[in-house]
Image 1 (cartoon, rainbow, N blue to C red):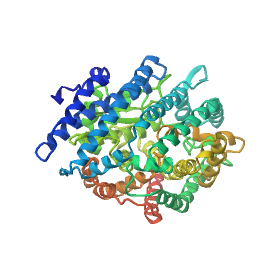
Image 2: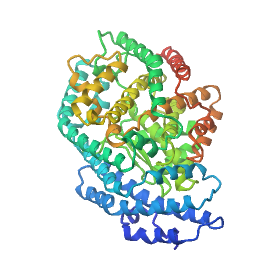
Image 3: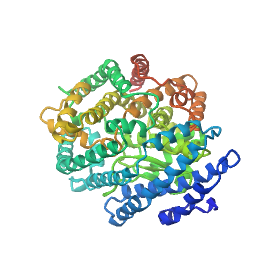
Image 4: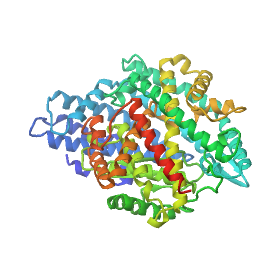
Amino acid sequence: MNFTSLPTDAKSILAMRWDDYAPYFADLESRKLDSSTVDAWLTDWSTLSACIDEQFTRLQVLTSQFTADEDLQRQFDIFLDQVQPPAKTADQKLKEKFLASGLNPAGFENAQKMMRAEADLFRESNLSLLAEEQKLSNERQKLFGASTVQWEGEEKTIWEMMYGVMYNTDREVRERAWKLTSARLLQNREAVNELWEKFMAVRMQIADNAGKPDYRAYVWDQKFRFGYTPEDCKSFHDAIEQVVVPAAERVHERRRQKLGIDAIRPWDRLVDQFGRPALKPASTVAELNSKILNVFDQVDPIFKQYYQSMMDSDLLDLDSRKNKGGGAYSVGFNAMRQPFIFMSHANSATDVETLLHEGGHAFHTFESMHLRFHQKAEIYVPAEFAEVASMGMELLASPYLTKERGGFYTEEESARARIGHMEGIITFWPYMSVVDLFQHWVYENPTDGANPMKCDEKWGELWDRFMKGIDFSGFEDSKKTFWQIQSHIHGSPFYYVEYGLAQLGAVQVFGNARKNQKQAVADYRKALALGSTVPLPKLFSTAGAKFSFDAATLKTCVDLLEEEIADLQTKL
């Protein structure tokens, strides 16, 4: 068969059905596979895999763009029920065929290792459960997408409130906004709890079907975590408690003193600590795009070219609107061989940080597009390094945010934004520990973990251990139920420690850039171009960083950030 006849445009890909894919799988399964044919066979398999992957990704994107569109939801459900299960079963046979061949094509060693893990984990009995898990995730996304409040005569999304109004310099306004938003989120409590119990039942069955002792063991193989263990994660959190929690307390205390208040309350965490008006970097999406192009150009002109091509090809959804899902992401359309970015503009400093972050992910897609699907796709690139691509871009771009360079801010505003960003890195590590340790507890104790009330208590306990310096007195319910809002816990279980590990890598890349920006960017791009062709530690070392869990590496990074913060404060 001619695999180049598989569609690469969105409309045709979305119209594909299992009967359209089946002949291609049959062709690959029947073909002779030896050293003389393996290269063409892998290329064709990659073309087929990219098409199916893009159909799933496009449907996932559409249902997050338009959460109230029932027709799109039905279309996604049809794919999950009628296309994905037979495609996964057929793909399993191809994995087994390739692995049984004993062939070892150059550059495919790491992909083979991951395929072997996938093949060992595969159970046909889990296909319907995996589809059900995705549907539950879609339901939760729909629930939060419809969550709005009335604010000063306007309907506002939760995300507009959380990342817009929370920057208001009037403390009374912030408090009122926070309480209104928090009360609205608590209205979702019962519905989220019902979904959570269903999530847990499905996941326990998935792990049992796969012959794993618990769901965490299943996820560890699913995420190809070959280089570290759950105990390594716990050591990392201990190091964070030792090194970073005190630094985060210093951040909160500086904020408290500068705001001139008795305690940092939940509504005081985002406002400018000098009481200055919130940063308003771009009032429209068009302005945001125009300025971010200039920033990317300063880091490396190739990044400007990449982003411009996304603008030209309508591969950005950046506005904020009702019934649009929350959060932000970049995904690869692997048949089209281009990325797509999703976020919600709120004219805040968070917009800039988010777009730099997702831009880094998008550039990872561009840099690795020369590789075959199984060496570059999002499901195969270690997330611990994929987030170095995004977080590294945030830091590499940070010196170029000023209007003088075509960016967003005055020198003073840029210093404010960068201080906020770097302080955010410090305060993020403890929060990441809460999210990750919560999930370890959930799946180590699945009976209690399936009980939302016990989840509330455990989350509150971990919060108090790591999130020191923020006073939630009188709002314990909002604190204890914040796990319900953290989407990764529900839709991407155990996907969070990656951010903490990647942040270590990103800060190290930034440290290199302080010494030699051009070389640091070159190393960064070289690592992105590797896709998943080498193990995780090699990806880090290629980018000029060390893959580590220890307190010493953390301290080096925290010291660097605090030094930068102190220097930037002289510009205020």
